[in-house]
Length: 474
Ligand code: PLP
Image (cartoon, rainbow, N blue to C red; front, side, top):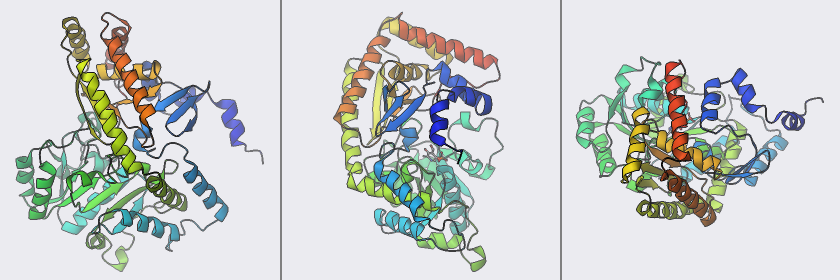
C-alpha cells in the first residue's frame, strides 16, 4: 500500500497557507495574514492547540463551539476505532440502523418530555432548513420571524433569517415571505407580525452568536405565549447554545421555555464528524412524514451515518460523565466575574455578558482624553477594529485564540471548551488585562497595529476583496 497519510502530513505540514491560497479561499488567507492568525497548528488536545514548535495555544474559540468536550477526546476516538473495527453496514438507506435509533433515544432522554422525535442531518444550517420545512408542513403557514442580529446558517433558507447584512449582500433575492426580522425585546413588533396569522415559526437563538445578546426583559416567555395564541411554532436554534454551552443542557432552559422544535449540530458528535439534528414533537414530525409516499420527503444521504451516530453517543456520554454542563455554568460565572472586575481598571470595557461559556466582552469609547482620540480615529474606519486589535494581541502575545463577535460590533467573543478549569480562567483574564493595559499606551504598538488594520481595510475597500479585518463568523 503506497498511501501513507502520516508520512504525507509529516512531509507537507507548513504548506497550509500556500495550498489554500492556490486552491481554496485566498481571501480568507489574506485576512488571516493581516490579523496574524496565519499559524500552523500541528496537534491538538483538550483545550489546547500546538504549533510546529510545540508552543501551546489556549483555544477559547472551540471551532465555533464544536469542541465543547475538548479536542481529540479519547472516548470519541475510541468510538471511531470501534466503528471501523465493527465493519457495520452503513447507510443501507432502506433499513433502520441501530446506532441512529440509539442516538435518537439518548437525545430524547436529555430533552423535555414533549420533544420526542428526532431527524438527523449533517450541519447546523441543514437542521435549520429542516426545522423551517417541518414548521411549514405542520402549520400550513409560510412566514418565519427571526431576530435582528440573528445567525442561523448560510444556506439560502437559513440566510433568509439572517440579521446581519454583511452575510446577505450579493446573494439575494432571498425568500421574500420569510425574512421578517424584529428587534430583540420588542414584544409589540412580534405580536404585530404573529397576529397576521400566517407565521409558521418564530426562531430564536437563546444567546445570540452575534454579539452574545439575550433578552433584558421577559421577551422569550411572552413570545412563547404569543406563539401559542397565534398558532406559530417556537423554534430554539441550539446549534451553538445546546449541549452545555450556556451552563444548561439547552439554552432555552434558562427561560423555562417549551420550544416546539430545537436544532442541534456543532458539538453533537464531539468534533470529528459532521452531525446535526432536529428534535420536535411527534405530532409535528408526522405532519411532514404524513403518508407512506412521503416517508423520505425530507432526507439527506449521510444523515444517519454510523460514524456520526457513534460519535454522538460517545460525546453525550462524555458530557454527562465529566459533568460538563455544570462545569460550564461554574467556569462561565467565574470568567464573567473576573472579566467584569477588569472594568474598574480599563474603561474600554462596557459590558461583559453571556451565559455559561458563551461570553461577549463589549468595548466602548474610553473615558481618558487621549484614548478617546485614538478610539475615534479607529472607529471612523470600522466598528470592529478595536475588538480585532484585542483578538490579534491575545493570540500573538499570549497565544490565546478568541474571535470578534460580529460585524459592526466592538465585541470580543469567547467560547472556551467546557472542560476548562480555574487555571485557564486566570490565564485568559491575565492576558486580557495585559492587552488592555497596552491599549492605554497611546501612541504605542497596539494603536500602531490598529493603524495597520485601518490601512488594510482601506486598501481592500479599494480592491474588490472584502474587508480583511474581521474573524467574525458565528
Ligand atoms: N445556527 C447557529 C446558532 C449557529 O451558530 C450556526 C453556525 O455558526 C448555524 C446555525 C449554522 O451551522 P453550520 O455552520 O453547521 O451550518
